[in-house]
Length: 353
Image 1 (cartoon, rainbow, N blue to C red):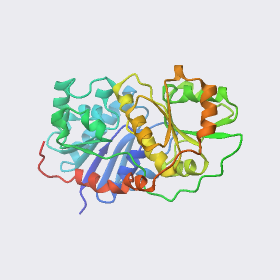
Image 2 (cartoon, helix red, strand yellow):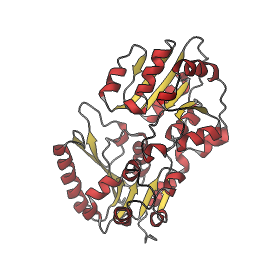
Image 3 (cartoon, helix red, strand yellow):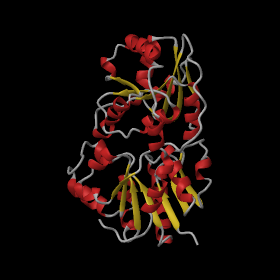
Image 4 (cartoon, rainbow, N blue to C red):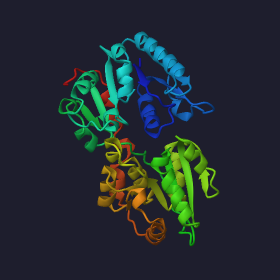
């Protein structure tokens, strides 16, 4: 008889990392998923393997949907007394803290509230001591983020990067003389790439953009109406990467440097870049940019106000075929290498933390 596992997040299951985790966990557990469904969206294939899923209609930032969600999850936590619980990010751990006592809890930190507050390491120690005491395992996305945990929490932390599954992607189309295509994917917002894209489009009419992912502001909604921007919606990571592999000249990864969360952003798009053999345009001053520079797989750009976009467009055209992607590096960063680690995190053993 398979054990129950409750997966608690504010997503609808379509997030690239969540969908991979659900697929892996569902092969070994009866997974019950709890999240939020935005109006007009489809839960998608990511939830197909789950034993059950419960999606609150509306935004987690709205009071009524949040209250309904909290009540639903609280009841389920009481119902499944012996279930293992997978919680995404510290906010949900805090909300359900009392209901998670005496359970096997895995905290999966995608987007740390403490880093958004510029409180790395031992800062905000009391709050971290209370929150991080509860889970038996803490998952972070890279070694850098592990080092940003307080020392006591590192002892029970593991690293599972947000890498794609291995796949046979199509070959890149021949370089198009006189045109250049940039893919802008993931969380789409003004300061995560939309403003950068608008300025680049204004600088060079030969550049076009394909966007995929979640729209976070009106500025981005307006950008997607631009005649040289094609929005393809929210698609599975493998589908987007297949398009990137065949069509993209560059993949965009812009991070504003106003908080520790962005400066220490996990190099998710770098892994997509490696698998699709597509150079990345990335903000300098981030942890991820150091990885790009070390591997030689992309172009580092300054903060938006310091960029001459006319010069940048010429450089993008001139450099797009000058990057090399090593096969052995690709194999090192594949989801299949980390599935066993994820599964072992839910083995209910005596915690060493």
